[in-house]
Length: 135
Image (spheres, rainbow, N blue to C red):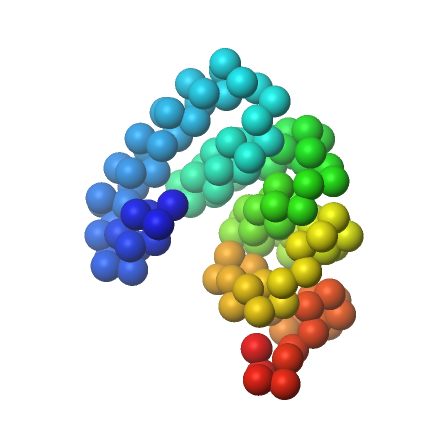
């Protein structure tokens, strides 16, 4: 993912797309062998969302949630996918589950660009209140 972040920041859209496509191929092969890998499914869902493959992203996000409904990182990443897809209520619900499961880092959640859809939402602010530093 860091290479994808760097390519995106540099405006290398074609290189970013190719990187995402390669990772999708690897993840799809991996998940055929290890279908219970919820983390792998969240990564695949993220890549599908990045390519506007909404149905595929939703399928993988829901599979990840079903596999590990009480794992904070999985639920947080699913929330990010839902937000990328513009699904605010689903993103907020997944984020609530992430918080309940232990993801309670307001500093990161408040600046995570994947959750931008939720930033400023009163329900988001209840989970991750602004700090005195204004985060």
